Length: 202
Image (cartoon, rainbow, N blue to C red; front, side, top):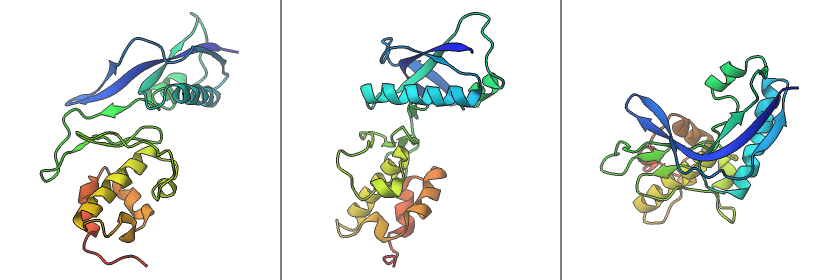
């Protein structure tokens, strides 16, 4: 059975005009390397996911990627390189994708990070949104998606400003409708404009 070594290094992915580049955020490994055995791509991806979850618990809120080591001549599972090219091996599941010069929205700051299941959403110039220590009204609607959770929080903050603290985002529409806007990378303030003058939902 093929044997691989996994290690996690602090990196982030920077969006540039003609693509994306991986940048180092330090040269110290986050946690101990791990040896895994895998016969197929699915098994490999599952074990990478498990390793990444362990690293994330010991280095919370850190951006990192998982790197693979193997002995020369090791036969990789069928479809391995295709899966790696399509980022299906969970190697960058915890790697923050940063827009260093996000487009501003109507005089308001743009989005620096859109996030994902394990990566936070961030408005430029503000702190990223992470899961709260105690559950709030957006944890359940986010359905374990950290990026969407932060997007909801940002949109709700805009609603609070517009209504002087009298209304909440989910007074206007349902989370599944908002998720469409998030997936389309609509600025949360833009979504607020669409719903702000509507009456409360039933």
